[in-house]
Length: 364
Length: 72
Image (cartoon, rainbow over all chains, first blue to last red):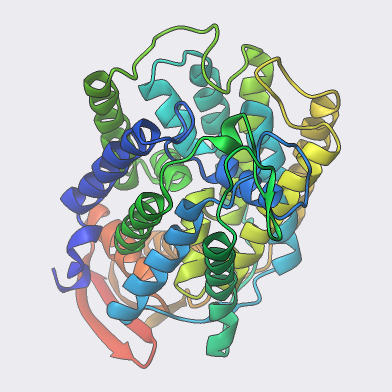
């Protein structure tokens, strides 16, 4: 069929890309990234917020090259395949707020949808309730879609609009190169680093960057999206994106077995807590916010790389959300939820229900 | 009269939702779906095929695609 010339957009394309992510993430963990966190978009954006001093949680400060690579890899693919389209103007402020609460929900659970899958593939049983919460939140989102929810049309715009986030990422990479981490130090030039904790655990710069660019490139081609996987399954009974998610978890599980990184259980899992209700509720909030914004945090980075200025706003919302989460005691830690985590989840769910219930531009 | 669905500028999953709605209303015949990015083009083509419709033609107009779909 001439409509599907892009081989990555076919069944085997999406499965292959899911498998590549599932192979790379455990490898990144092997080479230094935190446990069951070879790749975590939410955690890594949170670390970037820390590296910039937007929050001062000393253990989660690192300018993560994977995130930079995701955006730049997608930018590269979009230009090579002539798919770069600068566009913006679909309710940006709403997308910003959704990004903020998506991040807060993810940090109550401790992970984005990718890390949810990686935690499961590493044997972390606490991620089961996180995954169920994610699916529940996305299901609520599909109810709004059926009711006519949408954020309105974006408009084609000037090319530099689409370049802003990629340029910011290039700036971040420049800072990471000229101010490299110093052994045991908590800062280097303008960047903050962690001397201990997850922020101090990272694969070498070049490896992280190459993996990030590769994933960004492939994900732009295949439209890989974990939120979309469950959304399309619920909304259209369609398995396309879902097959990519299954490939990711299977590949990551096999890799973890090979690398000796599979440790089944609930207690003492890396960067995780055992408060099931809040694992579920945090991800329910995040899932709903991702659904209303049209993509998981990874997908938002890839969209931003191909020129979507609204997705870029969502990304900035997530980074700011991470700052709120740590400054106001909303984020969880291995000891459990933060002092104000419950209040933040409740407020976030009301905000998302308000957005879902009131945004219904007539488009067709 | 040829039915036209304008899905330009809509983000996922709206292009598919409005196309499915249009197909349901029309039941059979021919219509044109306008999209402005490759993801929407692929998603619409996939959804159309899953409902027993066919993508008859895809015209490229600048940064847009016009998908002519039909069911006999």
